[in-house]
Image (cartoon, rainbow, N blue to C red):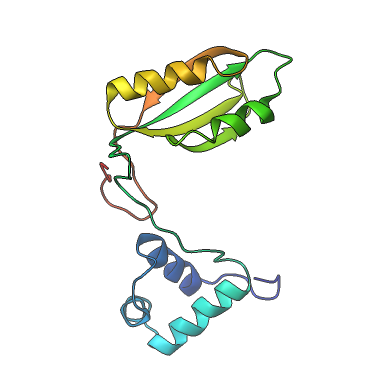
Length: 155
């Protein structure tokens, strides 16, 4: 959106609906925001053109690996480590969903999805030995809440 066209309350309510279900029909959204379906479609098109909505995606609960455990692995590297090169290799693993550099004592946060605990143990051991890792902590995800959700998505 441009500075001349800030998001209003209706835009925010439409975005909240789309966050919960990107395939929700405009007619259904229209009933919730007290507009016509065509007005909702025009607003969505404007939000897409302006870049507020930049893509639609699919969230898959169980992937091709039969993965059912998701975890974050915090990695700390030696002071002279080339973090970007290490993460470029890490992100190639099929279990790795996302890798981020972060501030604080931890250098990187890696989100992984695995089949079971032995698989988790193996992936964590592999990550610990990739590059110049000096510390590693793993945090298993027990539940997940999405913006606007009333209860957790337990995977």
